[in-house]
Length: 349
Ligand SMILES: [Zn+2]
Image 1 (cartoon, rainbow, N blue to C red):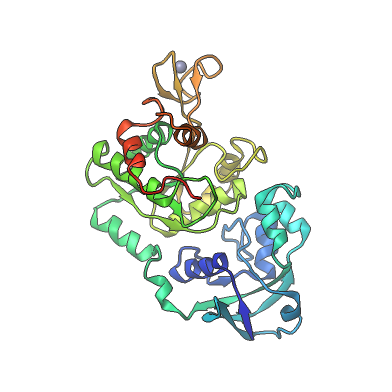
Image 2 (cartoon, rainbow, N blue to C red):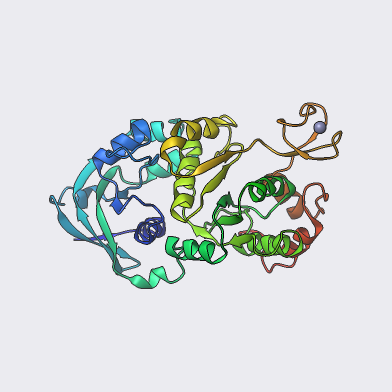
């Protein structure tokens, strides 16, 4: 039987194939999904906080037999094979547990509801190997880190060009570790967000002008944003562990959206799961510019959060640039800003 899949499902398959989503070797079956939903672990006890599943139209789902071989097609061409070991329904309760809300306005909840509730799990194999050419592969990042002689590597997740708050956190990482791996999520297409070109240009400028040679590696990560807040923060840590990082930074409201998660909910979940994660976590507070201290700080070492704080965020900088203003140097380095302006396309349209 042929099952048509979309681009995001294809990306999941590529990421399973490369080992980016290890220990997964296929789409999760019912036992693993129920376990992940209830306690952020697979049935065998390994930490895995999110369901990664294949949705199938009901009519096809009803005809799939136990252990049937399915051919997954993308744009009409066969791209992967899956052995259907498990068939189950993803329930409203599952969705609410993953996103900590049943609110249909939450983008993650909305997206899950738009998919068929019929899910099929089992080992998956990518047939069309051409998709591996540009894929981010753990074996490659691990080789790069080894060649650089890094014993410790801190991973940094982002979707935005670097601003001074990110810089503050990255310098903490560089202080602690041998190398900094900047691993922006690329290839996603939310209108109004910075393009991959802008994010990469900003980081090259920062790296060239400010960071010591040989201490930073940059490569894009293709995966969908799931907006699952705390659970997604742990998911991001697992991906960076698989890529060879020894440390991972989780900041304020990591992978959050709107007001659905508390600013440091991701820290709390990460702390709970950290002993079994296989990667050290740097749990950082929100950096801001303090007009009294005269530098970028966090509330861990500055007493003026309520009185002298100037907020720095990707959202604020996006607005500045799209409105034609130059962000203050306390928010964004001039070299970085110039690099963004030099891009063919700054925002996704
Ligand atoms: Zn201060």
